Image 1: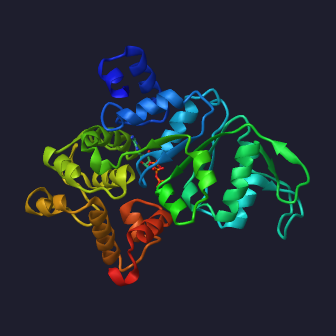
Image 2: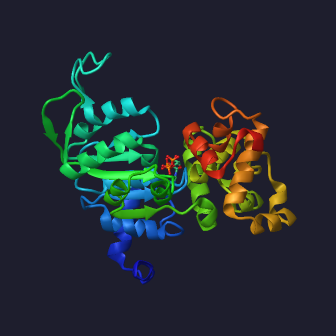
Image 3: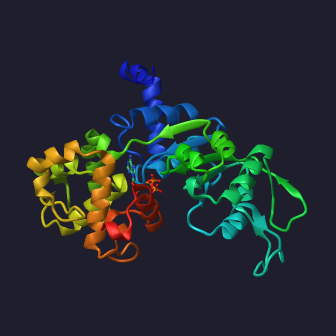
Length: 338
Ligand SMILES: Nc1ncnc2c1ncn2[C@@H]1O[C@H](COP(=O)(O)OP(=O)(O)OP(=O)(O)O)[C@@H](O)[C@H]1O
């Protein structure tokens, strides 16, 4: 129904979608993100919990921003918690806060992100990484709409709109016993799935133009376009790091450009001139997972197995090291396989 509505050119809807996506600085709403854009425009101004699913770098955080900025809560700051960034004990205090003296080192009362997000939006990024013992506490907070600070004696009522995101297959995590099914169902009210960049090559020209524009300003350099054969290479590449990786490739290539036009693009593992022809056949017959696994392995080999830090695989792939680690785990990439 949605694509039909959009195709038939309902001008109000088109306008609404454009506005919502501009709020998030998102490109591609006329192409591969058409369905995503439609879903955002439908759910933005409700209080409904949204679960954003998709590979790393597909734009999940941008969707969260677009949702918040188009909601009635937009005048308050959206609060983000990265559930993968800290150990469980610290995340608990980050989410719910603590009272002074509640544990060693708690020298001051701390207001948690749930309370900070009162009357606003709480964006729970990388929710799939949340430790099981915290999942139950989060579930309680969502059900009761109240929280208790660590060491606190009173409950605090909160009115928070929840947006969660993950690059994991949450249902698989539930089946593996790593994610509580009750929390999954509580979060999975309105799912939005972000398509991988390799599945929407039609968006690459407009994304490239968007990044060239941004980079010309950032680097204070007169770059206005890209050579068609280089654009083609970008369309054929596999993009394990999705739009984030494209952004980084464009930055590298823009820095190297000596002309108004980018005449050479720099893909992470060298310039893949071969991709367009015979090698492409092999590429097409491989599953996406296999291609992703091969690509990550090749990058790891190139980096001598280094994941974090300068020159590490995470940097080359344009993803955070935590994301690369979870991807490696998922794809069964261990030290002895590269
Ligand atoms: N449609 C888009 N238009 C413009 N920029 C985009 C788009 N999608 C992603 N980006 C850019 O790509 C980068 C990664 O996006 P984002 O952080 O939203 O991805 P993510 O899915 O949340 O990644 P992760 O799972 O690793 O946290 C950001 O710099 C973002 O601005």
